[in-house]
Image 1 (spheres, rainbow over the protein chains, first blue to last red):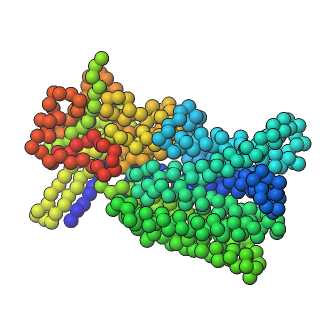
Image 2: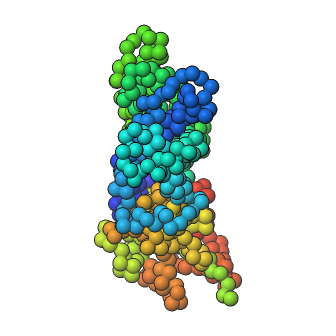
Image 3: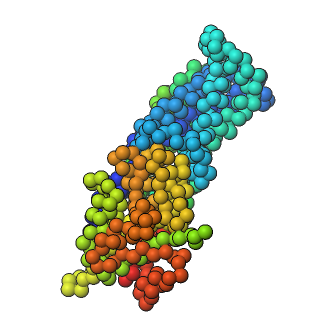
Length: 314
Length: 181
């Protein structure tokens, strides 16, 4: 018999750490989605017909570039609002910007977001010029950005990838929560964000652009699936600490959400449907992108919650 | 210049009766709000009657040498003041809880006013040449604050001939609480 009694009563750590609720997974989802949108929109802006990297007569993918560029800063702003809701000391939020702590992913993230906003907004203003140029005060910004649009779009591709990875490695440096202490989590979240972004464009875009995003998403889901496999393999071949945490994820309380909603509903099923769509065997259905988006947000919830429930062992 | 200190705590589990005086001394000394604590007692009983073994352990922040709370704090609020302890600058804290997620010992909590809070080894008392409140109040002389950089031999004397254990060493944080059994 072993019995452990403690009068440790801090409510946030008993019976297990419970510091991050729904706000943080929602932020991680919106941050990843927004990063994915910026990568896709900026990448296509450069690759499409007339773009500086163009080697194809395809495009212009005007809807994806316009909507992606515009939604990226809006969704990130919304995500950051949820992050703000989670802060316990809200009036000190500006303190993120009085320091740069290079060992803290959260600090890197805070400063990356400072770059993300002006650059993504500038790109959004130029590619949606026909709406924004009627505001005369925006004209000088639009004209200035237009001169450097290629450079800004090239930067934005990498900035988006950086923010996408950051939404994952934000959790990776916490050895105390062994499920999270995996570097590949950054890649899983980046690919999930890219796939969710392709799904959102697929959902909103006009018919002629939908099919291409269905194909892009198909490839992204495949990569996401293998990155997730590596995450699981890395976990179960890890130290006892990490292994038990991974076993908890794949067979514990959150396993139905992980396997059914994320793996099957968010990856396998949409991958099959998108392949059939691309082969023109089935008609496009908005259910596919909705499944991908649901899977993507479920992934964040499952990782954040299961990770908190499994602290490092004594 | 005075030499740099490296405070650590040695806790004699053979002397501890689990009275919780350390917990309540700390709460009153540091205005710890109701429902929260900076230190706590763990009581572990094992075996089958009549061969039962009981261990009482007073626990608190480990003031790690390689503290993940300091590494992960995005604002520099958690820091090493240079005396071997880990402290929090409240005016820098945003309440983001990265330190709580990073701590393998669950030593921190969010104060109802918003900032992260934890054991400070009663830094304000150390500055006045006093011992921490928990050490001062302990009726069985279980708790000892020692300076590992000192050559007074206090730490060595306490540990001599005893089994010394530390908690979650595998976390790699170089904790500075030592339990004697």
